[in-house]
Image 1 (tube, one colour):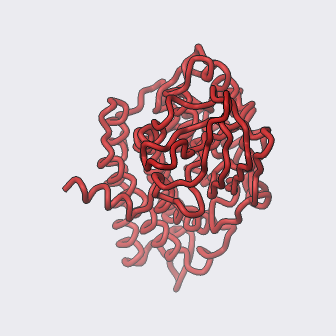
Image 2: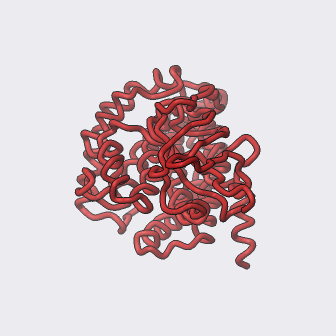
Length: 377
């Protein structure tokens, strides 16, 4: 498709990112899957190449780019099935909180190191008893003089094992629901902070996902983002971007799955002819091609709307719902056309199928997306 949202300058940047991914990511990804995380050295190389925190202004050490540069990075990772590097979580889900709500001192302190890959960032919202229900989180931050003392537990935290800096959703006022939530930045070398298990997942095997524990973790009050009680509204504001990021990754993943499957069916022989030559195969592929094209148009339209600061919560929920549900349908049909080989891990479609499942959960489940959309009807 001719994607009109990108300019020639964007295409030059895409070539740069593609070369980086093919040189620094793709050859090592299988090993990272076995390790359960990527190398820290990759983050520093990505920082040097200008691939992290693309939208951070130059005054804070950033490239001074726009959201489309971030889109290119995540698309090029998705193009080769490289789900290990948690760059989108770092650059597009965590750093934006500091960039948008941080004080000048906080931005000067943390953003340059996030841009350089010297610090790796994570955002900690989900708890064992609070997934999408962020109003009822139990992690508590109590003000004690010039400090906050944090106690609680987080789970399913992407970049959790590697993280040096975590934006933590806490209850600073347990008597309130949404208005009792605040966001506090926690450096992971603080006394009382502990990284728990590196969780073993069905997919995304190279991306580290962890439990985090806070036991009387003392952080200065200056680590609070914005003001007390603003955390929930901040998260709701940024969730539209997070959901668009999930939709964008899903869109590229399904395109890659389809491209690989078309190539496979043209090479694979059955009953004396190519699998592609069976009418059923072509009909299945044609159906998937149509879904992929329609989804791409919707995702790019929403991206353009986001660039104009016009992407509302309902549309963000709709594009996340549509893109991730469609991804599930496409990778499942693609795997079926691979036959038994589609279930073998060394084949890209097996990885894509396993990696796709989480997209209908993270950033808010499909059921939550339907609830958001349903309220607007």
